[in-house]
Length: 334
Image (cartoon, one colour):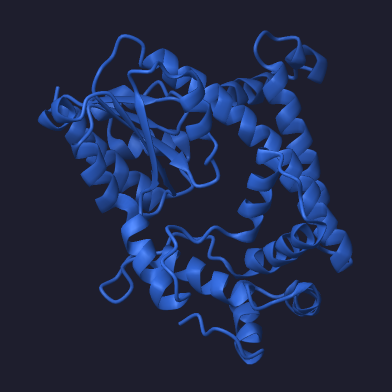
């Protein structure tokens, strides 16, 4: 067991983050202080062999078809170093593990009824089926009238909330089972939208464990937020995520704010970068910076302004949409 873990026994560090190159130094620091590293991934047959150097990293990454190749390569190289130092590294995400099985059954031409009758797959299949249907409806709605698009955003967020809550509950249970009879410092990787994972873990983990949840990039985030928004937020929680988290928490929703968050989410989706951004000396946190700049811009738009802007930019590529917003007189993204 590491010296850090001996000083701070039985701590679960739940770190909310995203797969971005700018997070790598923070992962490195957190993993160095941990005995157990739990990744937000389904188990892969080549993973442990890759960690041990028996399979080339590039071969492993090709087999998983990573959506973030630069981050994944840097992350794997770092994980190999810590694995060689004796760190226990596991991939734990039972929801995604079951989803992969569902895809395999679909490839085998199994019917929906066959899949739902397969032990352990019913809940995941129904959650994915609902969310996928709502997502298709959203893609169709954004081609039409603004009010219809807003309604589609809300319906998708409700379906997404159900599957995220299910995924978090399943992962909390699997992590708890994995930690049975273990002691030490545990790092759990999780996406920003999974804030309720800490709640589910606190409900079922034995009393000996202390859960500490935080945003991995909290230090640079507070600094950037102070510079851009005027207040030190720990993370630029975006409108779509705020809407989804509301639905997960099942709090009474203010209809006006619900519509406004959905409206702003439509603008946000047109402005956010989808490709990997590389840190530079001038902009060490490109994704985080971009999100705060969009956030400070969006909070200036009411529902009607979002409607007017959406009708202008919905057919435009991202770069052109930014130009429209700059002409509109708000934040310059550069």
